Amino acid sequence: MRSKLVLAAIAAVLCLEAAQPVRAHRGMVVSSGRHATEAGLKVLESGGNAVDAAVDVGFALAVTHSSAGNIGGGGFMLLRLADGRTTFIDFRERAPAAASRNMYLDASGKATADSTIGYRASGVPGTVRGLEYAARKYGRKPRADLVRTDRAQHLVDFGMNVQDAVDWPRFHHQWMPDELRMEPGYSPDTVALLEKRGYTVRRAASQGEVAAVMFAAGWLEGAADPRTEATAEGY
Image 1 (cartoon, rainbow, N blue to C red):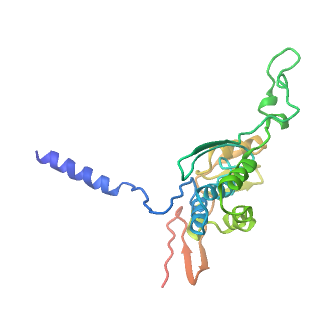
Image 2 (cartoon, rainbow, N blue to C red):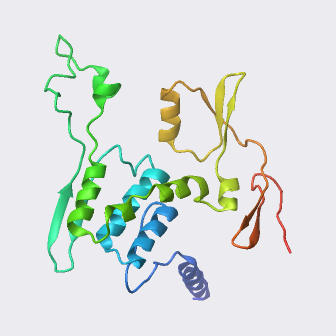
Image 3 (tube, rainbow, N blue to C red):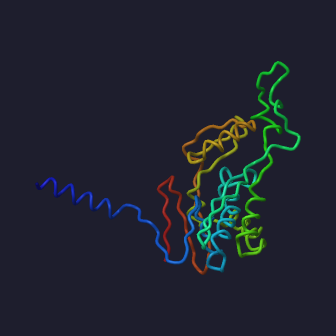
């Protein structure tokens, strides 16, 4: 009996430590990236509706999660409006106007590599047109509020705090031998793309040591490299 009580207590502690859902009364934004989520939340807070936020998040992910959230591809959007109506927007990629049924077959009727390699492999992207259509038909915000180059620049240059920047996986392009040494943390898609472009990629446990101090919003922020025993302290 005592062992069962101990197990029950352990299970209760684990449940308390488990991640809990985020709760809100007025609106919610969830995405694969913190910065994109924050961008969508700002749209809601400034009077935009759910479609405006979704469009803004989509364009933000084109910067922060380009391998999946991209303007060079396509997608779908399922909508349930406030009055209960539902609709569906299809903005998947389309074949070019000059495409033909047998364009990926050789003279003997066998499949070529043209469907996966080269300019003939790509379709016509639909993401930008689809997101703009959704915003124009169902959103409240003007286009200029949802597609902002200054926000994209912020996400690229200043979208992470100093500790995130120090923690981020690094790479080093070695001249001799000519290879790209990359720490763990990069996606397989990124590595495959680099290799496809001719780089010799080598996995590396660590690429150097970094320490950083940044002044932000009246505070000094210090970041120590987690790859070493470095520390950061302030007063």
